[in-house]
Length: 223
View 1 (cartoon, helix red, strand yellow):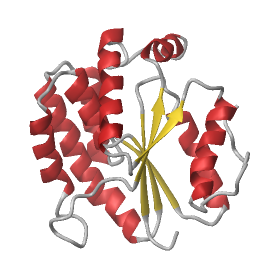
View 2: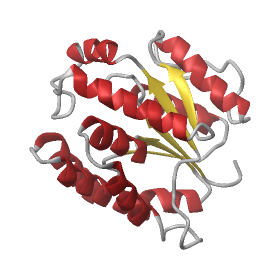
View 3: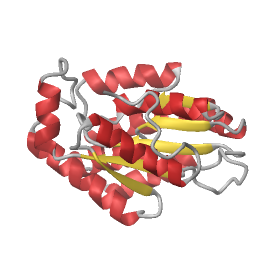
View 4: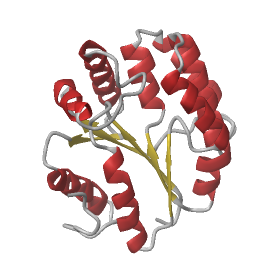
């Protein structure tokens, strides 16, 4: 990749996306790519403080959305845009699609307002002042909410979002499906219900098609 490339990873809690990002970064680095791994909410000192508030303090959907987009703006300014300008591959655990899925579909917050916040937050950063920054590719880990809930039950103490009921995650999953349908040129779906090595094979296939990884690569694959 001669130019920087922005790849986001999306999916409901428990879908398994986070466990695949670090191995994928290592595989890309082994092929000579410079990689920045980051996450949302988070990625900067300020954004990580806002993440802590979002995950643990009670608030309404508008407050959530404002904090998420404030964290995103700082993240774009301080981490994502500089990395892309250096020609790096940015692997980001969640981005704006998560806001539309969680605060929009999950919380029932007005997507028109989210679109306004998206426009305000994600423009004026790239060389073209009116151009809105979005991922070049979004890898969507698609998993039934009931399966994700069973995985989370055995994982760790839930945060404020993970503790929400199954109906909430059904709405979030539907929100992701609608985002994917609206941007098929950007979204790539992963069947996250499969065994980890099968999920890895799907990921490798996506990146091999673009010439970024060797076909059938198993280096660093999650077990």
